[in-house]
Amino acid sequence: CLYPAATANQGHRKYALGLNARTNEVSTLPLHFDVGTRYSAFRRSHMADGLALTEHALHTTADLSGDLDDNQSLGLRLEMDNMFYSRAYGSYTALQANPYYQLFWQGLTLRAGVKVHYNAGRGQFVQFAPDVAAEWTFCSDYAIYAVLGGGHVLNDFRSLEEKNPYWMSGRLKDAHQRLDGAVGVKGNVGPVFSFDVRGGYNDTKNDACFYNLFSNLTDVAYLYVGNADTKHLYAEAKIDLYMGPVRLGVRGKMYDWKNEDRTYHLMKPKNEVEASLHFPITRRVRVGVGYRYVQRPKVKLAHYLLMPELGQAAGFQSALYNTDVNSLTPAQAAALCAFGGTVEETEYRMRAINNLSANISFA
Image 1 (spheres, rainbow, N blue to C red):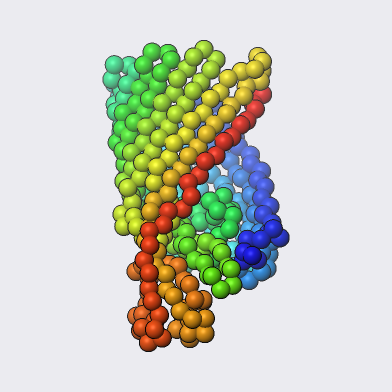
Image 2 (cartoon, rainbow, N blue to C red):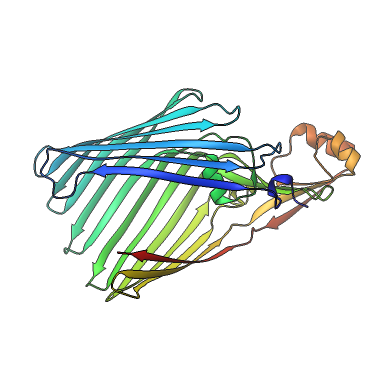
């Protein structure tokens, strides 16, 4: 059987409610605004200790901007996350301020800003990330662009459950994207075809990563999730075809992770492909169908083999412990050698995701 947190007795409940208000695109007010708040809750029946956990989150945003003249504007975007827990994890507040300047001049769009994140209640520290973008439109329908971004990313329990419902961990540190930059080209080829092709680089501190741990003694099987610093290059292409009221979209993305064979990349994507088709069935009803494929990278696992009683004495949870090849502590390595244990290395790839979806929208 699986660990209690991964059995049929496990339960996940989540819900959300949001409100938003903003000025429209043709507003003549000197100040434009877009403000909103979203409340969400998540409950899991069994954590690692078998007890339930409830997480409440309030995400509030306010984007204010004003025109300096016909070609320039100044803005300030504020974000606040208030996190509350039913157990002794401690509530906390995360704040992010994003002042920015924008210039629009003869087909050129520039944005220059900075993101300042302050975490209150979890160590009280300040982090910075860029918010810079440039786009040049040529031949009226084509544009080349470059962006440098980043910022705060919540590693809340709700988002972990969306990645894998069988994770096991305490509360993680929130992630900080130190840099997320890309360059690309996009455009429209007549009224029926549009594209967007880009390549980029991402550097994230305290990324949420899954590690594979299981035992052949107690039949425990679960994924442990923890923090790790990750870096990767990526290339992405998106294409949309418009055939009257029918739209066909295709997206592909490839990743190249630094130290890709390390176990913390176990559930990271290696290649992604998405396709969607939207079409009307009546004047007010549209149907959408989609397909998503995600391939995982190969990682190197180390099997530490010991007799049960010797494994416990050596500091292992069981006779078979699958983990990162480089994660063995000096004390464990010495104990493994002293008790006559063996180590086997193997390459492993998590099963790919194949997902079909469908939706109906009403106008």
